[in-house]
Structures are given as structure tokens and as C-alpha cells.
Image (cartoon, rainbow, N blue to C red; front, side, top):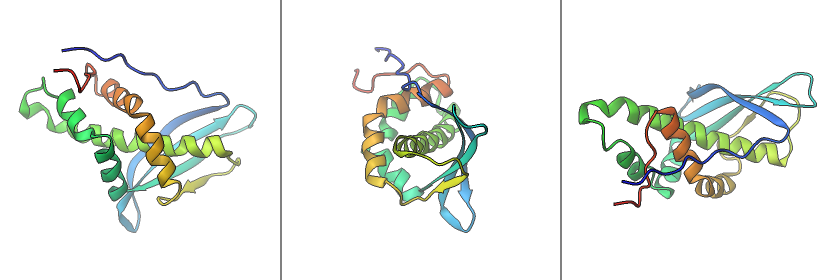
Length: 157
């Protein structure tokens, strides 16, 4: 068993971002969740809130793209079966948060106005897919850290 080094997020240059709430269901859209982030730019006097929406179908597709289920099975392999349910549920919530954060990063890179806003579930999905794939190790390291798991290299035997 080899331990994987935890990868850290790139340092934000001009924004401070914190998760406010989420994932939570979007009212009137049963298969859509959102995460709300507080965003503060250094040059702004105050911060804003950005709601990032994503559908369950998109989450399922992204999860399959990076083989998240396999990674999670490996990450929880040392836990007794009866102790896996809660971390599995929490891991899926954390995966949604991480994907929403990737989507928010795209907005921050493209430019953001100082007003509360919502990123619709159909915004930048190709770019979100590419970003999630590029940041897979960051996402799994983030989830492992939040769950207090020892990160594993899924390819180790």
C-alpha cells in the first residue's frame, strides 16, 4: 500500500472563496443541486454570493469520467462494511462541492462582476468536464482530507 501525496489547490491570486452552503436541492428542480460560495475580491469593499447549480446527471457523468466510485471504494477499503455508509454519503456531497468549486473557478478566471449571481447548470459543461479531469487528484485529495482518510493511489496493488 502506497500513500499518495495530498495535492493542494492553486493559490488564489485575487479572490478569497469559501463555501457558504451546499450541496442543497434547487427549489422546483428535483434533480438539480447547488452550492453557494462567498466570494471576495481584494479590491472590493464587500463580498458576493455565487450559487453554482449542477444536475445529478452531470454529477453522475463526471463521477464516471474520473472513476470516482472506484477511488472511493479503494479509499474506504480499510473501514468495516458497517462504517462505510456515512463516509460514502459525505464523499458524494464533497464531490458535488468540488465540482461546483471547479465551475466557480472558471467564472473567476473569465471575470466576475461584484453582484450576487447564479451559474446555471448548463453553463460551461465542456469546460467543467475538462477541469474536473485535470483536477482529479486535487478533488480526491480534498475529499480524503475532509473525511480524515489516508489517501491511496488507486493504481497501487
